[in-house]
Length: 430
Ligand SMILES: *Cc1c(COP(=O)(O)O)cnc(C)c1O
Image 1 (cartoon, rainbow, N blue to C red):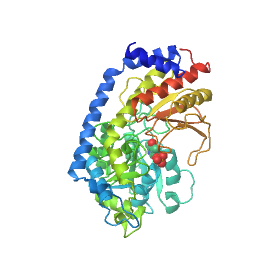
Image 2: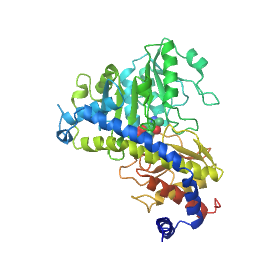
Image 3: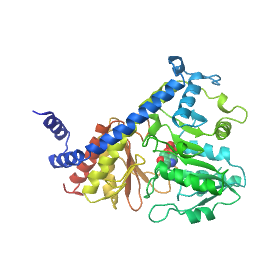
Image 4: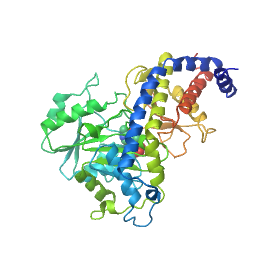
């Protein structure tokens, strides 16, 4: 028996129908040249990370954490130096005390804004949870309560920047520009780093001293450059997404200009103490090793996303990004239009998980979101969306957002199972 037949029989024994397997296999074959390009990007990023570790003199002694106040935590300081090298920034704040991506973004904003200042998003709606942080959705302790205002300018219908309106909305109060790289829970294109660079250059030509902050969630290592390479003053993200490589158990990062990072440290801990405190406990090793794995893990997730887009587009569902366009983040949206499809999709992803494969995902009222959300995840790190996961707000257009996969074979298996569930329920014929 050939190796191909052996794998096929194995999938069939796990309950995948032959027609589903053959369909997925044919889809994958056509993608191999593209996968090769992704491997080249991963290779370059891998070397970038190793070089950063070498430049920081990273050593075995750095892997031992501290307790208590965490003064002189050499491992923590080395990791922050490594992040600064990777993102080519003056400084970095990389901490397990940053509880999630929203927290990192909230720190970056509240640390650098003062009453009377205004935020402008030139790329439309901000990520759902940031609406609470900013006070677009009324929320206790929001920036709005502290007299900080917000404006947004939507992208034009073709996805490009509305430069006229961006210019009109920059005023004497505008202190910070918030640019979200990834589409988040929105059906709009994700921005390339190059596009972000053009936007930053435009904004700075109008107001040179404005702080350009990029919400970099899901974008890290997808390209060989990062927004901080094209003028961003701060880049912000979560360690349970791309840069944690699946190993970081918690945390967030903010990389950028020294002055802004210092402000962030004072906000995260306290004025006066800043970066000096914050014990790393046992987190330095997984955070550093996760960063080391992040380029290839991101590549695996990217291949999974492209595979999903191609499978579902061949079945005539709308994929965003579509089957062939370039990728700037690891998120794949597929519009199914009806709740039963997203239910089946999530059941399939769950059924392929290494952890909690036996549970059935159901919609729930997730804190920070304005509609119910259904999620499929069977992760080693709770809620880590660099691990194979899918989530969908239970509202029109009933789009599933699929992301992650620490390995490509896992992502492929998950998508195959999602299709299998749809076929079993009679929602799709293949
Ligand atoms: C995930 C995400 C966030 C928030 O991160 P959490 O860790 O879920 O709080 C913010 N912005 C974007 C674009 C994201 O994808």
